[in-house]
Amino acid sequence: VAVLAQASSTVAGLAGVDGHLRPRLVGVLCDAVGAQGLVRGQYRDLRVGAAARSVQAIAEANDEKTGVLFACALEMAALIAGAPRAVRCLRAAASQVGQAFQLKDDLEDGIATAMSGKAPHQDTGKSTMVALLGRPAVERLLQGHVDRAEALVRSGVAESGPLVDLPRLAL
Image (tube, rainbow, N blue to C red):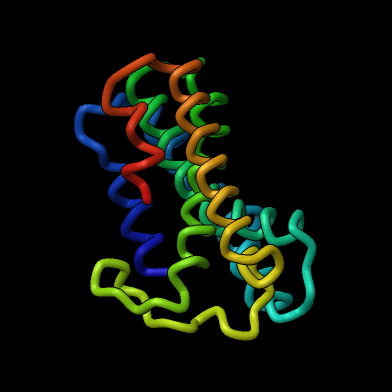
C-alpha cells in the first residue's frame, strides 16, 4: 500500500508534465493496480492458483498481475510524450510482455539464481503454465509473446529504436 501511495504521489507531482495530464496519469496507475487489475490478478492467483486452471484462466491472471503494470508504464509514457494514438498498440504489446515475463518467472521457479533474485519452488503446488503444458511448450509460448510484442511496438510506434527492444529488455 505504501508503494502505491508513493507511486501516486510521484506521478501527481511529475515536474515538466502538464498539470491537466497528471490526474489522468494517476487514474491510469490506480486502474492498473486496483480491483480490476493487479489486486484482482493477485487475488485470483492466491485464491485459486492451487486449483486446476485452464490455459486461459492462467493467462488472464497473469495479465492482471503483470501485463497491467507494463501497460500502465507504457500508456503513461505515451501520454506524457503526447502520443495518445500509440496507447492501444502499446497496451497490447505490454500485455504480451507481461505474459512473457510471467512465463519466464514460472520457468525459473525451480532454479534459484542470483540474477533472478527469486527463491526457488515458490510455485510448488500452483497451477502454472509449466505445470500444465511442460517446459518446452512454455519456452515456445514465451518466444511467441516476445515476437508479438516486438511486432506490435514496430507497427504502432517505430520500426527501430530503444522501444522496439523493450520486450527483450523486460525479461
